[in-house]
Length: 184
Image (cartoon, rainbow, N blue to C red; front, side, top):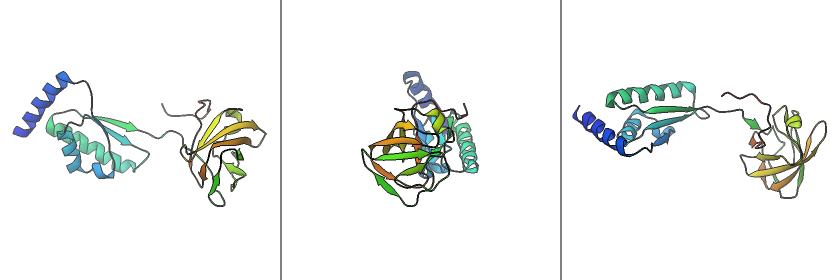
């Protein structure tokens, strides 16, 4: 169609001048065929699919839609599939609790129902992989713990940044010394 030819001419000329690419992370509001088509027409170069959210069947549908629209406009839109790495989380707790800077709390890999004194982090090698001074971020970074020492069953930690700990909150261990296998 005429609009397809105009878009290709425009994109070709723009691509000669600009090396920056427009990367769009899709979500529920932006993954319908109609919205994807408008995004491509507006200049989207790369689609990012976040596999941490949504089902694989939905991702396949979006993938196929992007490919069809790319063909329709004769413009290659790249697709980045962002897959989730290993997810380390707190275990269950009796009830959500708040920790304050200076509080002490123990961390264990054992399957327990936690409380303000002892909480599970579901990473089996946590006792082997962490040492004094290592950091643990809980509740996706809100709570910051520093390892003070360890025994054969738990890590003794001090709270550096307080917040709420509840069931199955995301944890991050930035030391990079984790022995967990990851997909590369």
